[in-house]
Length: 229
Image (cartoon, rainbow, N blue to C red; front, side, top):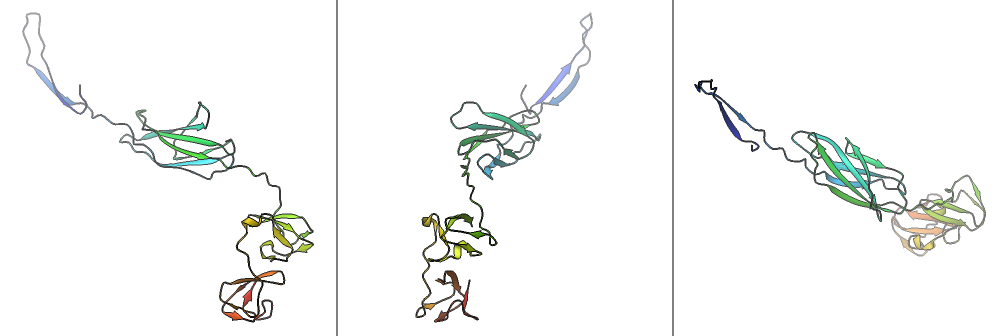
């Protein structure tokens, strides 16, 4: 029979004398063929770390409903994939290898166990830095060659210091960047003869200042100065 087609059936009874009864008739329509579910959409990877990642996608659709999703995770350079299932549209991967590429394939399964076309996405885990350098603390005393992290950058103490923000140290201040190539463009020393406008930055007595408005000849650390630390 063909799916989604009308059929008519007649039944006649015949006795031993080959006499036939009146025909009984019935009709029916075969069910329409239900196609496989749609493929998932917007498959993406978020929150990637050195050992974890989160896989997300938009739900697939089917006239008879989605039963589950099959998720396959394959590490680059291997032939065997790790299989898992979920009824939701997100899954967190754990115990991954650092600095390693992975391919993730997601398929939808409907309530008749029909499987959608697979959708694939690739990603690479991050590399563990292994840094043990502490964050800068305003209350801690530091001496020459001490190292700290501040706003994602590494600084080295030039001499004894306490409470001096590493990123406002200036050219002759107590801190210097461990990797100068990561620093912003150099900030010049304040000059009494130069005109500054709002947003301009200067260094003065080891501190960094930012102009609030147009100014010329106003010492940055003076009371009521148009400069702010």
